[in-house]
Image (cartoon, rainbow over all chains, first blue to last red; front, side, top):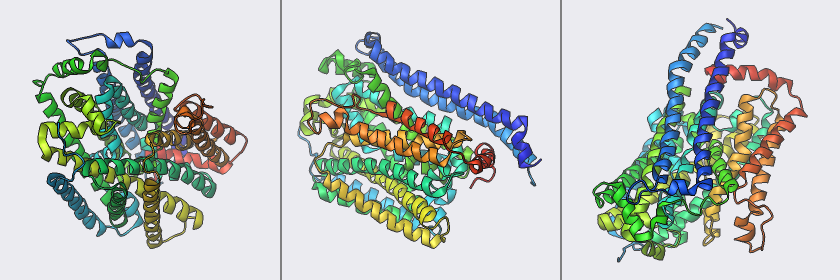
Length: 99
Length: 512
């Protein structure tokens, strides 16, 4: 298979489409996570200020969860890419070997 | 509490000398490997994912985030934590949108990607302007911060401190290039993570390892308000604009982007972002504990008395809990942090000048390795000199907004053309140049007219541009300019090359 044929192949197109679907989906989740937090601070200070211990406020675990969540989204991408994207890349690269 | 801050103690000097000696030994070792341009700019693409993850974290975790965020939490409580989260969220975005295509398409600088299928000369010049602007604002903030912090911690005069930083970091970059700079970042990142972990454990040990008790002590001393969102996010539009600059600005920082060329392939680039996000996330998770510990144990009055900005909160709590030796260690780590960040910025500046301007504009892509390295070294000295001179000129100025400016320019002038060139077939040379020029002009102009400079610095009664953070306006303007500029011009050659580019972007076929 030549490079031109690979480019036009449904598998390559599907791979590129899938890559951006996953990326954009995770980007949207990231925006919801972070800007949701910022808008929550701007809009509902009282909710974040409620106590969940003698002095600890709900805002503290929520802030920590934003950091942990951002890392988890990164990890989700790596797991997807290692398991689904890389094997497909290897398969497609194999096809144009020698060209 | 009597503090030895500001007097050069034996322990601070010993730790400082050990760290500098260690980094110089690494530089000497690296210098012997420094035989080609690829070694100088990209460490021969032989850095492992874990090493690169630490180096990325090292490049990103500046003294401003270490001392500054601890201080912000100590003086303003929960608001400091909100600020800390903003510094992390760019990393996932970098992974999803840029990291792998950047690695596959580029060689040494991010301009390689923007110029990949466009006309080299105009795109390289425009990208260099965006890149150098970002780096200059960033390095200026670092240098002024360095002079102030070292004066505060070691009692060294401001100018000497700036010159000392300049000389040591020039040694790293000139002789050891990317190899030495990477190892300096790794050493610094490990020391910083270790130092902050020790501080966190010592603080928690005072409260039976219960964060709840720590927060109770904070509330008892400074009031419950210290644990509630306060005045940081009053204007949601400004807060979102700042968040946008912090998040997407990362995707346009030249010194961060060039690290992706030091790893062998896209898989390694991906893994290194995961490591970096882990280290940086951990850092921002525990740094608020140090800040809260400082306000509960040292007290806001004492912290403010030494530095009104709160920058000495972490060193003061170190001295209280670990005595002069721990203070010396933390001070030395802060100094190493500044050195490493300035070295990374200088290497990125030198690469832009020598690879983008000399190699691709002056020589049109034809220069030997020896010539490139000679020019890269001259550019290193030039950038370093400019950094030192700017640092001395801006003595006593409040430059905190400069980092914000660097992120605003990065997110408005560097990120849009980079993303458009990766995803959009119809992107043209005119579109790229328009997007960079409009993004750079808009972000700088809006900051000049914003409350931060127009009112606070220049004393005018009212700001012409209402937001302190322009990204929410300047970035869309840059994208718009890129799209309009591309639609009014046509570049069939660039569209044809987009196909080759796609195989390289997504499959890594033909990647360097």
